[in-house]
Image (tube, rainbow, N blue to C red; front, side):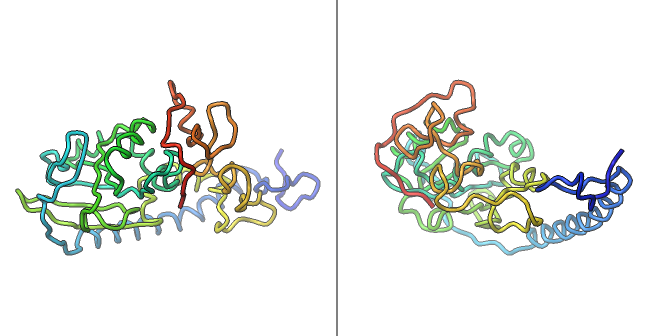
Amino acid sequence: MTTAPDDPTTALPGRPPIVDLATWQAARDELLVREKAHTREGDAIAAARRRLPMVEFDGTVEVVGPDGPVPFLDLFQGRDELVVYQHMWYDGAPHQGQCEGCTTTAWHLKDAVYLNARGVSFAIVTTGRWDEVASFVDFMGYTQPWYSVRDVAAPVGGDMGYLACFLRDGDRVFLTYSTTARGNESANGSLGLLDMTPYGRREAWEDDPEGWPEAPQAGAPVGGHGAPICWYWRTDSDGNATWGPTGRPVPQWTRPGATPVETLGRQGHHC
């Protein structure tokens, strides 16, 4: 037997109201109307995005990867379309001192097999020196292609923290789209799933019902951001909260074979 949501004897604090299945379905159907409108608007925005003009630039500009300097054209890997994540970088910071947001975005882009099958290549670029970048990539266990774009002008280099799309026509290269901040969320499937859960992302900006668990505040344990937010959550291999030279994002420790690795040994910057 279900209970009414306003029954004070059975209501659970900090939880959604309890109703019967028919009442839940009616509320779900009402929300679905809004969700479908949101989807259709997203489709319309994507159509407008495909109609943006594009900017030509020199595709022979060199970036540095594991094989040394290569032209930006090589990032296409022979395909006509390319998606690039431009990862923020802090010179000399320990691995766990690199940008939390960029780290979690890169972690969710483990490989590009489905993009590749659709004729789209993927790469990550950053402004760090290649020796630091290579060490970081190895430490994090990333398998995506990474390149240093240090001292390279925009749109290949310049400001980081962006997703950018490029189109190739033979040896001619064009920038077609770029986005940053929450525009990067399309690369992070975990955020979309968290948005479906009762407690969401537990970010301070979210519009939560009265009585919901409060979001961790600045100054909370683990990096000053609060342990429940996984993309800010860093510990050593024993689970001790730390931004020291043995720390890394907690989800990284959960993967098979993850072990501590030497860092650059300097307490770090973060965004």
